[in-house]
Image (tube, rainbow over all chains, first blue to last red; front, side, top):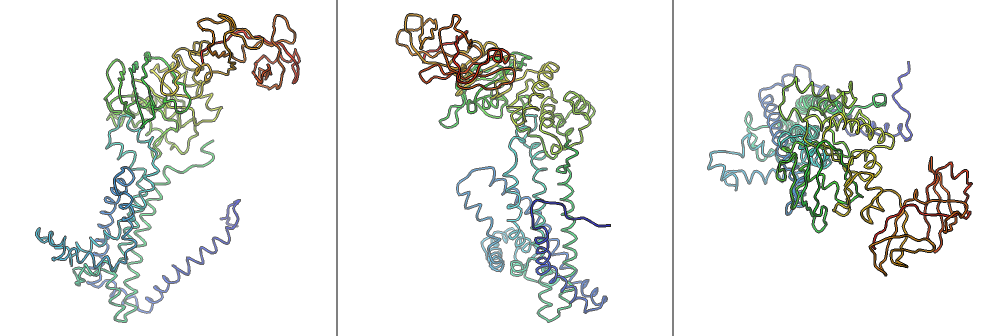
Length: 284
Length: 345
């Protein structure tokens, strides 16, 4: 039986574009990743298990995934709010505010890390105020959270903004004319339509936070079992020339991240396909 | 269930969208607001619905003052040109929306949805999403959704504007049917005169933010009240002339008896193509014309006639008559005008 996966198309170039995509993906993503597995395979399964589930390593997983998840969640709400304000209301210096959203993208992460540490340390502008309320930000998990929130903000804003912009105003007006209040209109009409975008933004922010290194290491303080993130552990191992150990931890990170991202993507695909699936027969 | 609008005004910056408009829509009627684009008709409808606020004036729905009520509390059904269905909800969920936000009980809502699906002839499509419907079906869902909470009045903004000609004709017929069945006071906005003339009990003709004329289709077609109405509604010819004797307008060999004008007034005479009588022989007709073009228009034939002084007019005559007389391009005919309207320029 011949499996036909190429549909007839008027646009030429299917073969060459697919070929190039696969080649590119292999060179840039798949070969380096398989190198990771190759390197790890130099140690035995027992050794791998010992390294990947060491107490210090387990704690760093918890810290990294926990902080990334919380930071992405904060960004989801705050990013939606920022996108909403930017799309819906005219205000002075809007262009400047809009442009400054992208700063966390452009800033070298180490610079961001130093700036944040300076601000949030006990002698810093914000740290001084927090200290008065007996809250310590720098060199605690809270500091890590702040850094991860900072670098993840643009994702949600930039993904939600265009979708919000394209929203059909008439749908909102229809909801109002049908007797819905502002809240019902938002939760029943607007939110379901921008939800896939919010989820995408959340995923991107989450993925970015998982792999973050530069901005965190300054503000975290890097105390084992307290504020040590997984990426730092990997770097530490590399500095000790323990390549197999480093890749072992990296593989755990990779697999868990991949599983999480895949879950979110499936969720998203499911919510999207529910109401956009159309076939010619159904239209009659 | 009536609509009363008094001295309504609305400006957008310097642009006057609605200019001192007053009218009354009777309970249970089907009224059209007819006007070209930019005449303020949609703005007027949106002000009545509460989606837009007026600068001054009053709106009464079912006799009660509604000028300052929010859209949410006005209980009007509004249908948009591009349907504005909720894309992430099924047909049934769309129709139930107005009932759900009012917290009606489930059983009641389900029954009402079924009732409406039956009314708009979309039974069995309740689980479809809007993207799986055709344009005509979408607009019927939009109508059902607007009717579900039993609105005081139904407002339709160019309801057939986005549909193709055949579906539009079907829906037009169907909506008169629906109106008879539900008897909801309906006000609809259109730029399509055929639509207005065909289905509305009463028509308000709007131009530049003001109402030019209000009346039945017959009133408006046969007795236009202004230049604008004469030109905008139906096809028309006009010639410009002045009095040659008291109470007589002369243009070439045409003579029109009029009254109420002074010598020296510039007068425009409007007459419809179907009010032009054409004959191959002089009979009692004095005016000559030359056929410059013939055009097939289904049961009618349209003749373009050169009546001299660079003036061309059109005449519509039944196909049978045209064929029997053998009218051809370049031929000379005699013509008369059986009905006309005159306005001072």
